[in-house]
Image (cartoon, rainbow, N blue to C red; front, side, top):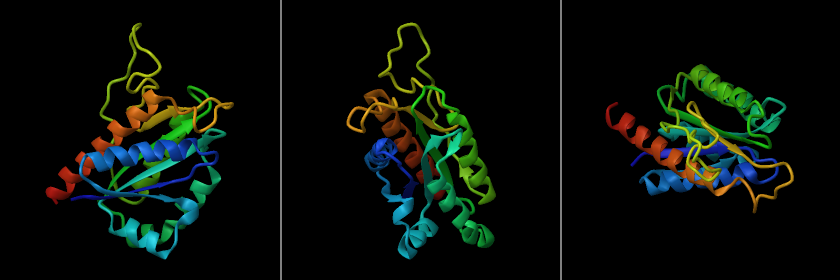
Length: 189
């Protein structure tokens, strides 16, 4: 059984809700997975990250990049970078913003760069987008992420209202994919 840690920051609760959906997907796929909010990270949490087979990064997109709290976590991971503790672990990422675009891809690119600094192996969504005339907002991968999971929560929506069900369903499928990729990768190492 692969061990996956989802390390995330959520400013208003929307990204936490998305993280919980990613977690549900990893668990449904048979992974031993858990969530760690960056603000709750302690020595035991860092040890869990070091022992994990896969790490999924999550943060809201603020002003065209990951939140400052997530960036503090990333900067603190320089100890793991120096000793290459995360080398050859599977990495993936997700983000949420108030607008459909919101420069979310800049956050995903940041996650990819962070993973590459740590010599990790990146896993994308593995999903085709819902890009037909018949597509609805609740279809899988409506926002159209390939490199990472993208979600949208209107600025005036509470976490009870957003992200929409389609984005949460996409998050579950994404979590299951990362769990499957991690299991396959660790079985062949």
